[in-house]
Image (cartoon, rainbow, N blue to C red; front, side, top):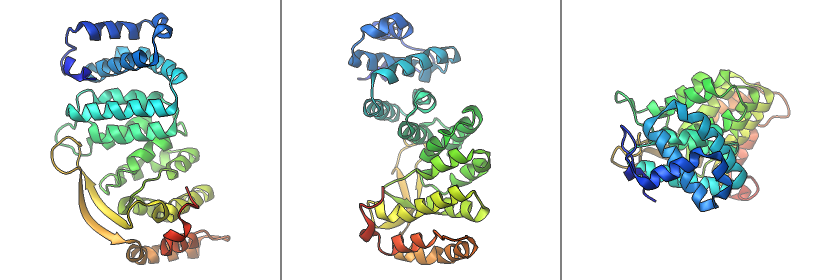
Length: 300
């Protein structure tokens, strides 16, 4: 499905098929007559239209269409749509990237919102050569236009999982603006790769002080990282931003074994352990990082 070739950044091309699908997307009475495959095509065309034109007058209709889509399609089907849409945007060098806002702003599933935040962060068309324009836009949008909803933490978790240390100060700047519920949802973000950036972000939050619930959840997030990891290393890397800029998608700066990295952060962990009240949870990090294989399958 190559709808993107029918659109230009300036205006949609006069294509009969796209015009027909677009008209269906504007006609709420027609949606029930569409089968699932047709509905997906209609939604993607409307997303591309908005992404290519960024016409604010389309937003209300898009939200209504997406809410209807959520009643028809389950989470797995919507996730597949997000993946397909993201791949098309990357193939077309960022064209239509703002269409991802519908997945980010309208979906109610934390996993989809997290994935959409990550995708938009790396596919955002940067302005004035600012490599961090994508993450900056996503973070600002979620914090200032998401009504303080707890679910914004899940979406911000998607930005966190980029793992790039250059992005962490942007998240740190807005941390105190999040509700405790949003902070807790952010601690639930998990990846098959352990990055120095994510570990240091949580250590910084623990050292700066947080609620008891967030403290315990952030410690748990650090503790289980090596247990669920796909590779037995802690990575320090920089993302290619935007992802279609040309070149390797990730520049590896350093690769460290779990044991060696644990030795590096041990002084910080021991200082935190001395400060925390009983029952202490910091020892879980030492336990899990020392023998991650012994706990594999026991934590999710």
